[in-house]
Amino acid sequence: MSSLLLFLFLFLTPSSPLEFRYHNNREIQQYLVEINTSNPDICHLYSIGPSVRGQELWVLALGLSPSRHTVGIPEFKYVANMHGNEVLGRVLLLQLIDDLVQGYRNNEDWSVKLLNSTRIHILPTMNPDGFDESDTDCLFSQGRANYNGVDLNRNFPDAFAGLRKQPQLEESRREAEVRAVIGWLRMESFVLSANLHGGALVASYPYDNSNGGSELVGGASVSPDDDVFNHLAKVYSHNHASMHRGEQCRDSGPFPEGVTNGYLWYSISGGMQDYNYVWAQCLELTLEVSCCKFPPQNQLPALWADNRKSLLAFIMQIHLGVKGRVFDGSGVPVQNAVVEVKGRSNMCPFRTDKHGEYYRLLLPGKYVFKVTYPGHKVLTETLNVPHGPDQYSAMKHDFMLRQIPATTVSPQTNPTKANSTEANLTPSCNHTLNLEAGASRSSWTGLCVTLGLVAVLLSLVS
Image (cartoon, rainbow, N blue to C red; front, top):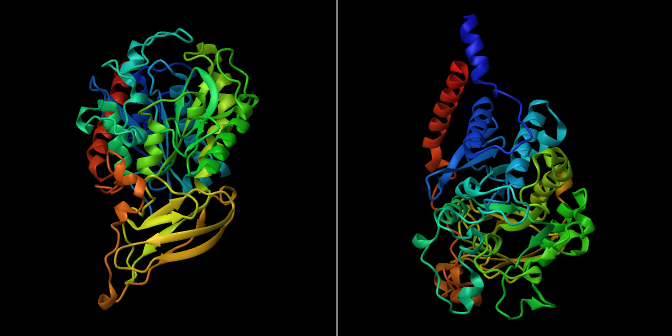
């Protein structure tokens, strides 16, 4: 019996504390398996697909219902190492996982409230193949691109290229890592996100590209949610030890308050943050978290201390604004209802997901909402939106639609054509989630447990 208890203790406990060093891809996988195996009530490990060389892109979800979506609980994600030679993000996200789990196990108020109110997905490396090829040069190391030599942050569909009638790659011809993230965005209704880079110290926000149209203001490419993006960027920069100063890196900046519009800094086509915002109605920032792309290992504890508060404060912003469901005339929640905010003409209008849910990140204030759904009267309501992050919840408001009597139904505009701009975009705006969140990945759970057992057995043998 004592031997069995010892084995169970080893199996359910990570083999060693998380060290401040650069873990290779195999070590990251082993750590994620161990933390998932020892914390099944708040962790769920899954893969969104393989890299070009077949390395799995592992994601750890944390929350009270880590394996699937819960109505009313928003979905958040962090992505790191999109460029293989920009490596600090890998370290920061592993430390963040450790911090969240240990805080929850110690019943620390900040961690308990965050995981009770948010489902957090963490992808420590989007480009494991690039990391394998990288060296430790501060600025000019190899390994930025994936195994095929493609910059993943130039390989997503681009809304502005569509407006210019420029040809777009078919999805099947995009890079494996990009296809994996696109599929991930279709499966989960993400609300807020950030991807971590290196080589500068600034929080950058959409748009990264422009069509030279009305969005171009003073050299910046301004989105309909520019006020929210600017706020989100400042939350990160002002909670960071030095980012808000805006002049920390010799070869970039200055950045007032440590933030910048992406296009104002430099334009890119095919970027991930614009794709998240335009097609997946997920507000994403690009966080440049270190002047050096591959910081010396002895600086890692200090760099974690610089970023920890910012990483946590940014997650809490997912509770800005208003959330709820849209119900039809029979009281049934409906998918693909268009939920628009007056004065915010998004290229792809925000829609309800398969649960009938909507989430709109908004700063405190008064907003006019318009809800459209076929066969129902257009609903217009004015809402006074408070500040939600301090309460770990956005304002909750459901929209109750009224059905148009059959004898008076008139042809309505297809809700997928609600914005005249979107008809010119390629690919078309389509937020339909094809799968039940987590359902297609159940096989990975069994694999993870098996891998965890193998890792423990190997450690025992050694």
